[in-house]
Image (cartoon, rainbow, N blue to C red; front, top):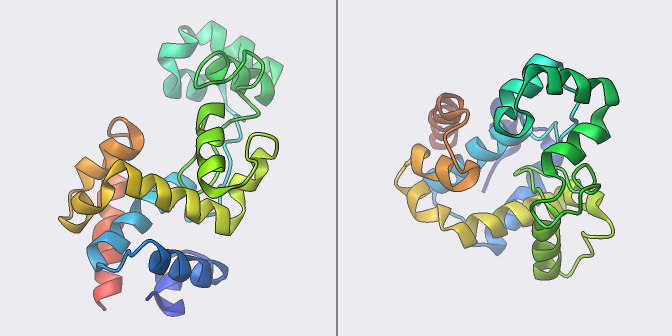
Length: 197
């Protein structure tokens, strides 16, 4: 079980302590490597559980860098940024992931694993018996955010790779690529050291 002082060293607010411990117990996550990997991946995704929703407050250059394939040109990025966060979200996620064209912003990334897209909100909502489709902001509530992340973790098969310390493999399962791999590796190494005390 995690201790308050360990969370402090990791950089997670202590208000998450009981929620994390209860969820780890419920989902049988007891191996130190797996706990360290889960915390490394989710703290990377959520800036230490402080950024629980995608804001879409981008500068044109950053929007173009992050969503180059979707945005296409720096000119398009400038146009979208001038229209605001909702326009960006709808453009980037609209018409895919189960979203209608105007639902991209509504079903943007939320929680500690950044749940994205109406299909995912529906799926995890049904699994947890919560209406995330009509109340998507619930995905950033601590208990629900942890539950979604651990359910995702179990269903994607992250545990075995995590127990083996395979940061690259777990990153691929979570991210679909290797975005932030170096940071995720550094977090894993640091958190594992803290847990082994």
